[in-house]
Length: 154
Image (tube, rainbow, N blue to C red):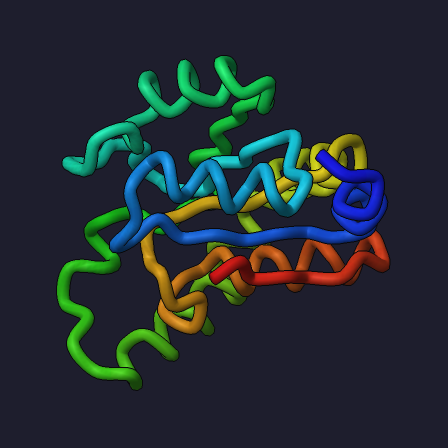
């Protein structure tokens, strides 16, 4: 890792979705950015995609000297995501996330803040497009408390 990536990462909250990516490409992106901690913000940390279920993802992180933390309480239960069809549905879900889930999980949000301040970190969920994912709203909430920049890794 270059000094430049390390310095930049220390002042940044990254987000990344793994939709459409291989596990190797995903980790290349994180390592290039200087990420040292992966914060899994999926409610259910399971995936049909190789490498992205909680146990295997944790192992792969360890092999790359990346800390793995799962903060389930900051995710959105699948029951709330089942009937999403339109952009409006997603927008309403994101508003509800900010109104309901984040306030109820304030103590876990404080933990996320501590984690991203401690090591260069990425908030991870499935969706490639952050506008359809709660991790963007979470990153904004956390970064505003810490005065950090948010970067959504492509």
